[in-house]
Length: 54
Image 1 (cartoon, rainbow, N blue to C red):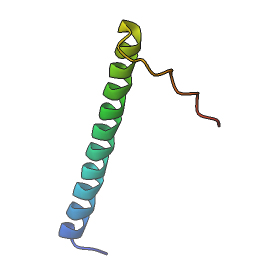
Image 2 (image 1 turned 180 degrees about the vertical axis):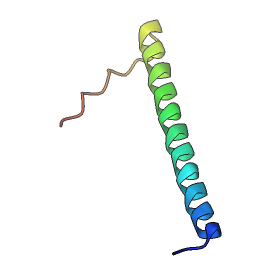
Image 3 (image 1 turned 30 degrees about the horizontal axis):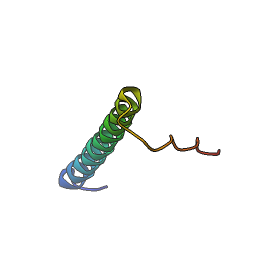
């Protein structure tokens, strides 16, 4: 059985991973919103990219 310090480090690493994941999701969402606004306002001259293939 590990010491309490080991478990604390594991919990902090998991919390840090969740925080980074959330931050990246928010940045991606913001990027999509900005691109949608650009298309809506006609500021984006390039055609929209094709949808990703699953």
